[in-house]
Length: 601
Image 1: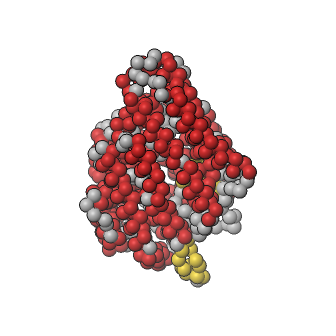
Image 2 (image 1 turned 180 degrees about the horizontal axis):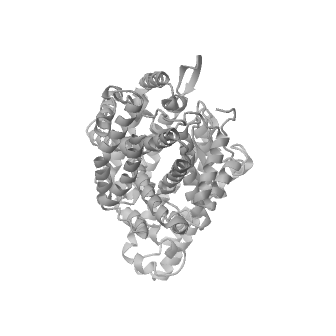
Image 3 (image 1 turned 135 degrees about the horizontal axis):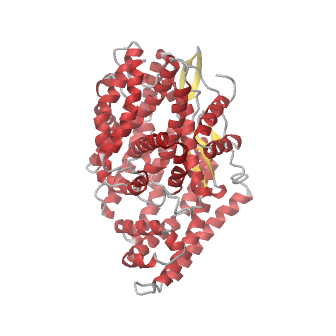
């Protein structure tokens, strides 16, 4: 790889620094606005009843929604700014302290959220009349109707307030512990004849190294490292899943999946159709694993072979080459998309450098105060990481579509199922364009390998993660789970998903330790929405291939609207029925064609 260091992001246009007067003033203003809204809410709602004229209730709702959106915008900006330091440097004690102070400052807002949700729930029977009145309340109809429905699953105001306060020293603290442990853990590893201290993300990224002996040594080093921290991470898992189960029980939820489905804005019928199609497709992916093993002259893939590169793209990309590659391919889809990506590269929205103390994986976060996004990844020069950058820029484009459409914070609240739409489509754009430009069978093989590796992770591995989390929640109802229990459940889940496509002796029993998705009390089952996003995005790309440029305006309009509708309703705009397996199977068949092409090379 050429010597150009992957960038670090710049948020100086948000605030000059954590200790700056501007940041401190904003933090104080945030707390002041929460207090003001609490007072205003009490004043405005104390005389409201079901007999109050709908026009008066609509006016009251509009005033509250206006202030609430302003508060969410400021709070979202402050949190994103603090998180930019915590996510990239867990050794930064000041940032971690400020994050704790911010979370503490949010407690009154969480309590107010409960009061607001409960009050809207009491208005449920007259909401249809209220929402006939023109104005801000009517513009937020989806939010209000959804809030009224979800109010059915609230505990009492006192109980919800106590849960919010205890959460900081309970589930939230456990999640922070997992993040701190995994980001600060490092391993001495010999690479290219030199001993190096590698962060866990850097070690994990060696799974794509061209030398199989390096991949195998990295796998065993990783297993050994996770072994040293399995006990505190098992405690964190138990603490979070136990808290979720308890709260779901008291809120009247059927199970942990209930709230996840509501958050995803889909129903059990849709999930059953999706999972059923995924399960049926597993033999197809196992064929891909066997074909890859054959190409590597192996009897069967070990875990450390799953991400092995193939073909002529084994060279590394510089970050400059990555920028050029993505911009060229995005331009072919939409100048708007390319323009957004160009801004992201030029204005340093991306933190790509690997370093100890930085969180693993990748994400994109919205910074509403400046109507921008920031992208974190751990760039290693592989084609897979190029694809990851494109994926996260898809999220940034999604945010851009909503910002440009003037959507408020409440209107921008997008479920994970639809949040993956733009990111997956952006990955697909890059892969499809690269395949078309391929000049040799070996280059085509390399591109297909990158694509199918990602697809298999989102279908096969996500399926295993769903099985794992479901079993953990069910067993946690009865007792705490040991680290050995968690490892056992993970292995059983991986065997069910990977079948005989991967050597059962060398699976990844510690996958539960480093995936932050398991450690969020506020969002359980942070897995199946990825599969939804992949297959929904793949299906949309197929429609784009049929319609050409005429597809783009409808698509950007969809992205601008993802916070204002149920997934099924938004999908119907494109003639898609997500409650039947046929749509999901059609998208999987597109991946199946790539597998057949891969096998033929």
